[in-house]
Image (cartoon, rainbow, N blue to C red; front, side, top):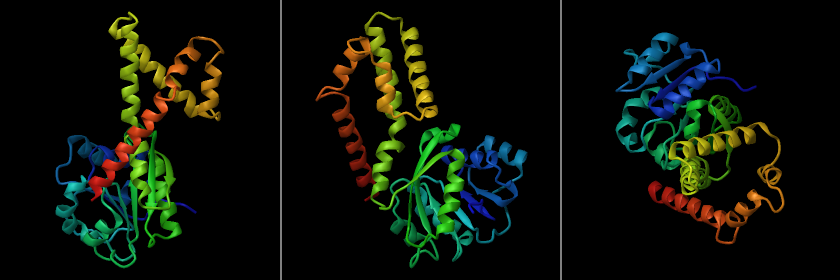
Length: 274
């Protein structure tokens, strides 16, 4: 049965680390079992620690944890690794949200991880900060079924969790869901500008676009229907929506453009990972 770990050390509590921490606390994870290492903790993190009672930069030595979550910036891995090795033991599961850092990169820098690394690479996205994110995960061969289930429990506190069976697919996850919120935000911008082009005041067009996208997203979230079915339900034959979709669904319309955009993001993710 899936459970929270008996002990967890979070390394880095910036935007994503902080979002996960708040999700764990809201999800019922006992704060007495959480330690946070962050050399420059924000005031909000200090307030959160005082309110909930988890350990923030504890002065005494921390024993090897059941789970260590790495949520630092990828370029800080070399600098941070020597300072966190004492919390990683032979049985520790390492969950990394460091974009571009492979299992091999992590195993080379962490103790007890070179032969049978219990490492999970996870790629959450920005909506995790409001509990509506989605995280793509890959488990190295040293991760047990129970550790995988525990990872799912932890990451489910900030949204959905999807597993892939090939590490290279994490780059595809990054290009679809990791970068995906930016595509949606751009759609809002473009829809608002299109409204302005039709004569709407800029502030009215912006509000209409914003509420349209958030409303459609909420409908998609609540409905069991496919996106295609929902689209068809909005579209009357020969109507205004059909006229717009004829442009968007043309051979040179939105679909091939999105394929190209996602592929560009994937290629950049591959390049950044070395």
